[in-house]
Amino acid sequence: MNMKIITSVHNEQLKFISKLLQNAKSRREHRATVLEGVHLLDAYLDASHLPKRVFVPQNRLANPEIQRIINRLPEHLITLVEHGKLNKISQLTEAEDIMTWVELPISGSLPISDDCVVLENIQNSGNIGTILRSAAAAGVAQIVLSKGCADVWSPKVLRAAMGAHFLLKIHERVDLLDWRESFSGDVLATALTEKNNFSLYDKQLDLTKPVAWVFGNEGSGVSADMLAQANATVKIPMIGATESLNVAMAATICLFEQMRQRLNKY
Image (tube, rainbow, N blue to C red; front, side, top):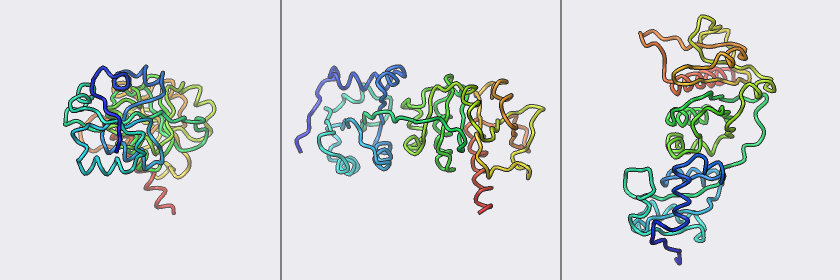
């Protein structure tokens, strides 16, 4: 192997990677992000993508897991980094790990009738990542995020989603009211109001047809404007005294009830 070696944290490529890790504006400007760790790179390669560049800690080159992932890559995409340098820019607290510079995918046209998950002003990166992971597991491929959501391509969201990004079509910074005008399927919003039309387990709630699920901000929920645009609102029945569920848990329950209905239908 004849790989390039970076020996300084002042290297321009490492400076660029650091900006992508820390700054959503840089990620949007360059249409790029950074995957931290072997697992995310594996998922990226499994989805038939090739990265721009992979940075490998030199001291871990003999590690079997690192060797395995290197064998999946063309050698010209790999750059070794001297021990301790990647730790200076990583957000991970564990031992040095692989970092991968990747281009952001082109999302294509917004869904107009397909199943989708719509996130409005969700701020917690872990919640967004968990919802993406649940959507991928439940077979819902289209994700629409409002302008007020946390950056879906941030390192925290990427880690929480565990590779789900690469199985989905993700539409960022969308004006949801404009999108609603062109969406022809049913829109269901989760809400704890007196105007709930359905319990999630109501037999009249047919989830076998295309549905757009709207999940709102952790504190304030779905906005009044989006509630007004929904065909129906849905609540998750709870026996205990808890007032509400975490939005990621609520989304997971709704998506898997939808999947259950469809599996039973066929």
